[in-house]
Image (cartoon, rainbow, N blue to C red; front, side, top):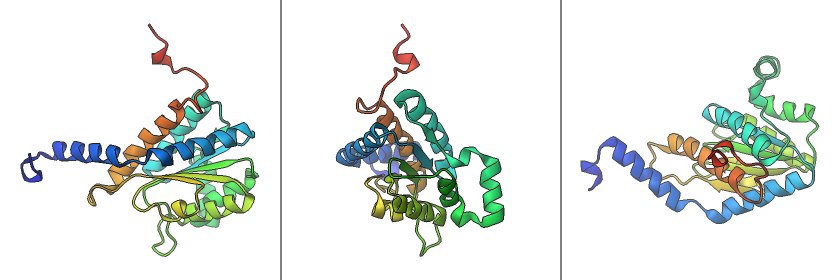
Length: 203
């Protein structure tokens, strides 16, 4: 069956299979190692994302805390602080200032979920760029799960998992969907998982 005779559902699912086949398992393992090292040294995990990636960050905070024993936070979970900082100081610095107040340091790790990874030239997610500059300046490690070419996140990350672009018209849905696939792989990985999940223990 070629693309001309596929339904949209078949096409989308075929693209999904292609993304899975092209994911870099080595990059995923490097990300797991970076995360494990941060936890082992007593570091905290700060998860950043905007839009759909912010919702993924919130879910991932739960999983990293409950399943992997991380002290983990997402700045977008506090809407009062997020909107106050945005209103008073501007969107570009909202995450960087939050990290500064959290006293980010060399033990910590920042995990970024983003479709583009941040790009100052295109004025896309400048808040992620500012946050990563702050994180690197503090000596924190950085992990990214990003789409397209990974943008600024991929440039500075200690480990970056890039969700392959297999369809230019479906870049965002695949990138955001596979953020969830990859972080669920992270928290299920034997190097990170410390607690059993409910439905794997119910008989």
